[in-house]
Image (cartoon, rainbow, N blue to C red; front, side):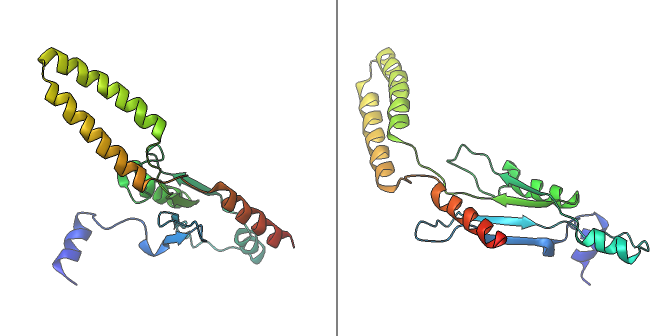
Length: 184
């Protein structure tokens, strides 16, 4: 054993949740429209450490017990963030659910780019601010630089944009097919 191990143990720096109970990077969507962000992490509940003696009927009843699943989709307005970001709560929610006896699922999704309408609206708002500042300073070079920058930003966005965040039709087809297989 190393000194680092003893220091971690002394200051309680070891994780209280068993890392082997986390299934990471499970692709929930595959196909021609699949994206690298279409993955999720599954946090399995901690096994019960209660070693009380139970009858065979009680053991069978607990093994057939259904465990609730809680799905956490990270925030970010569909344009930023990911499932591994501690600040947006993904891993914290998953570990908390598992600690409470639930299955915690933390999903990532394809992030969207800014649309043309929102780009024009924000350009108009920022343009008014820049024009007011420019008129107050009587500096027309500032306005010209802003217009050039916004033109470059729009061209970049146009070339690298995402058309839809998630193709909902394929996801619904997968759910329907899974239910058919389960029923049949």
